[in-house]
Length: 354
Image 1: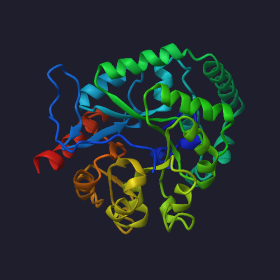
Image 2: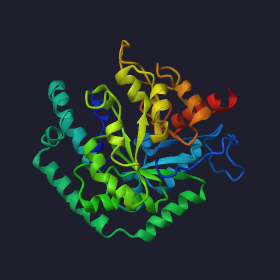
Image 3: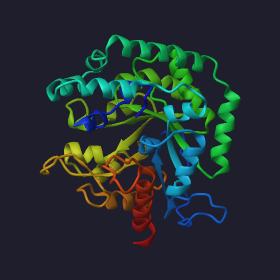
């Protein structure tokens, strides 16, 4: 969850209160599953680039050394790095947004809360005057941080990840339809400086048209992420109109969201759009017709054809990054780092051990 861009906040998190330019190729050879002798992580299993999005560790302390520590403990060598996590590494002020919103939501009845989650202005409107002042003060501080960003520090952070064998293929800076030229430039420049190949944001035609020119300018991908869009009339037929905007517009395909909201087999979607899928969020869910529909599950315990997807990528499309997004409830005796490690073991079993 990007605490600096509320448009990137998924309702599911709040509910907890109740070509194409050339892509990196893979030689198809299975790399060692265990960590290297030097202790660096290795989550390339059977030729598939497994990894995680740092959103998976949203409940854990942030910062550069912590993120590296989590990667080592969970054996993750490929990252989709949340923009706010990167900015924390760079010394940005911490946003109070999440705490303020969650506190304000707690004051509402379930009916009021449900309505607020459906509209951004409705959610922001529930803040009291003191909470709004805190947000305004933060916004001023954050704007000053971006204006005076030390780009040498960005290079230092990139090299630190690289020295630990951690590849950052996406920075989720989330420029969108309403982003200014300055914000779009910042988003792509920052991701490029980190060695990433793309940025991600929520899928919409307006966002694609707004941000594609910047993706082209920086020779990067603008990767469209989906939640429930494919269950809506606008995208029920697929993302063709969005992809037609530019060859630099790609997909960050969340196949479990796709399955959970539509009930359709994501393997069919992957077969059709494989050359426009840069990366995928990888998880397990129930389907739309389950007793508890569209609900996140421990890997292997849901209805999403998770193993079929992984094997399809391995056999035909190993250039697609597969990033675990931890959204199921973590047991009290575990934590999100351990659970991401369990997801990596699941993937290794499917891709290397059969």
